Amino acid sequence: MALSLITPLALVLVSEPRLQVCTNKACRKAGALDTLALLQSLASTAPLSTAPPASLSAALLQQAAAQAAVAPCGCLGKCGGGPNVLSSRSSEVFRDVFKPITALALLQDEAGVEVPDVAAKACLAKMYADRALRTNKPDEAVAYLTKALNEAGGLRSQGAYLLYQLLEQRASVYDTLKAPKKAEADRTAAERMLTLPHDYAVTVTA
Image (cartoon, rainbow, N blue to C red; front, side):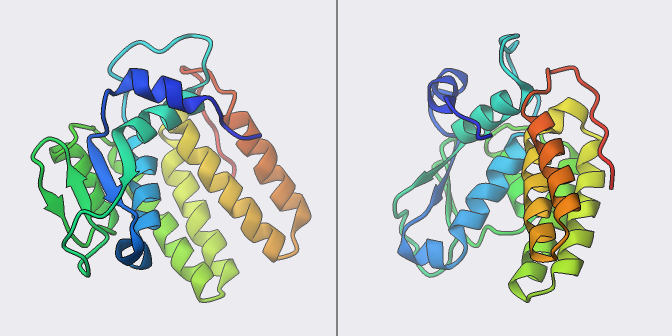
């Protein structure tokens, strides 16, 4: 099940992106798509500034808010030092943005998005999982993703979209490890994340 209908909602939540990530050739080669995903994952855990419609799930609102606050863009110049991120507030271009701590600082200082510390810890563990996968270490990736899920689980419904992403990724790794029951369990849990109301208490089983 995929999240959809986010663009109109995103436009309502934020009139223009507060941060823009260059996804042109040089920055893309430097990992800009990972930076964009990181910033959006972190932003998705921030409290909403307005009361959300009761008919929408927590995950849908969080995804929309994240994509409204952080968006891709074309070349920002300063090529070769990316991934580059433009702040709409200061019009400054920040270079070499790829670490969770840097992304967290940009969101809080430049975009005014308050991100819980546990979300940053979860995203750091996810980054290590991604590195493990790139070096063909799926067992290590599962361990890091489990750590990320344990960190993000404390966010409850505020972390529904982040939990959805982490569960889907761990399910894919379980597929690689030929563990279909574990993969199915994670995908079932991920589906639940998409339907959580805003005040639902999330429990994640490692």
